[in-house]
Amino acid sequence: MAAPKKIINPELYDAVLFDLDGVVTRTADTHAKAWKKLFDEYLKKSSGSHDFIPFDSKDDYIKYVDGKPRYKGVKDFLTSRSIVIPHGLVNDEPYAETICGLGNRKNQIFSDLLKKEGVRVYESTIDLIKQFRKNGLKTAIVSSSKNCLKVLMAADIEDLFETRVDGIISENLGLSGKPEPDIFLEAAKRLDAPVNRCVVVEDALSGVEAGKKGGFGLIIGVNRKDQAEQLTQKGAHLVVNDLGEIKAGREEQTSWGHIYEGFDPGDEGRRETLCALGNGYFVTRGAAPWARADEVHYPGTYLAGGYNRLKTKVAGRVIENEDLVNIPNWLCLNFRIAGEEWFQIKEVKILFYSQSLNIKKG
Image 1 (cartoon, rainbow, N blue to C red):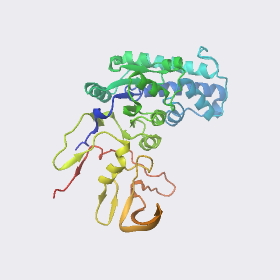
Image 2 (image 1 turned 30 degrees about the horizontal axis):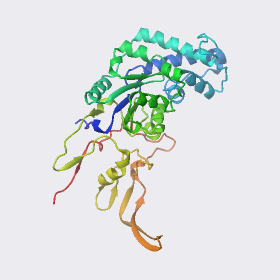
Image 3 (image 1 turned 180 degrees about the horizontal axis):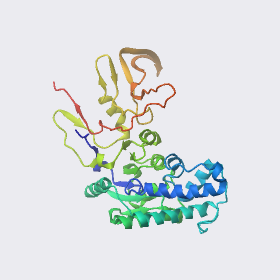
Image 4 (image 1 turned 60 degrees about the vertical axis):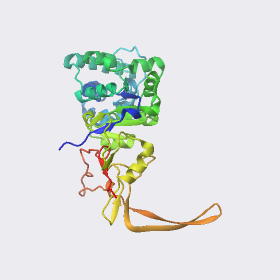
């Protein structure tokens, strides 16, 4: 039986801001190939075959270049290898040994791969974009890539977005790249949408972090790279493996239950309390398994009969309260075999966002 879809209520939001590579189009792998070819060629040439440590298409890509402006990605990766070269100029030749030169070389490699491999899209994302638009939400494409328009046109999807903020526009306006929120804020401004009524959809850790810094109403992390927990830690309110797990719309309440729609950080504490589950001996608040106590979530487990009685002086009077006391929260329990890696759940599905809460009558 398929898990119920997470529902995004269009009445809570005005606009949805989509990242491009890895969210809308399947070009993240193309970028990773281009970065690997660039850095492997450069590292072999500069260090020699004996000391050559290749660029890792997963770890190095995620840590240093994913979602970032091209020249910053070059600089951050080279810094990780203790390599310092001049920044250079944006019009440096592709083989110049400068930050800009290497960045321009990467763009050349990417363009060649794009011509050879073409552009494929995530059909589930395209379907969701159409759902949002049908429900009256504005849409924007937000990308650090200077190839954004080229990719959109190759995929014939540029008409799905009211506005575009990409690497070229960012450079012209002097906007900081991810993880700063500038390009998302610019997109919201162009759509005339309040930040707290905008949804950010990202697969890169730097992009999710940018969404959190910008104070956006809902941040959806798309787990394309097996990093669900990291996306949550960076600020994603909702993590999915594919956008086919989400739909736009409303569901009617039934006489026996209540359905929560969308995500409201201000109401999350009450929802976690109402969705608590217990058996008469202990109770666990209804938080996602990877949730940690922060300004939004307050996961916890409580033991029946475990109270703490304290006296507090308030306005000249002594008030005595007896409150439940947390016991260790089992939701974040982890384990490992001695000498091995910590156990990780490779696929996590959020169920409670769209599940009904049974309320007994009478």
